[in-house]
Length: 171
Image (cartoon, rainbow, N blue to C red; front, top):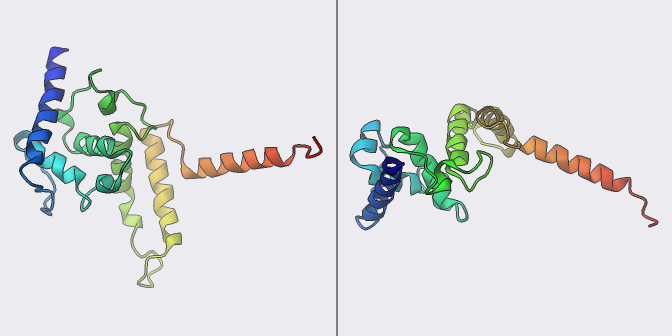
């Protein structure tokens, strides 16, 4: 128990101390497994950078997104404790937890090959993202069965709309 608390405090302290050193996250070299052992602050910076991860554009969930990125890149440095549930205590389908964002990155990595120009016309069209979104949803569902895909959300809305359409409007 004490060891886990020390690990979380150490991770937070390293990240905090490196904030004043200026961002090294603009380096185009992603953190290596060695970075996790020798320069965890760089990993935190890299994960928070708009250039590398979507955490830089997240407002509401930026801390959880950054934690998910660090969790993805440095799993051996992460210890789950009750001290901060964001790291491991929040359900995997909840974007306020690191596990959600770790799973999002894993799913995106599995499906990024579908983000190219699929029809070969030299342009990326929004309809081409459907294959990527479907692939990503399947991968996220595999990692977190409780995750609700965008298709499931649409189906739920359609069912709700159909049930509301059958209500007697004379009431």
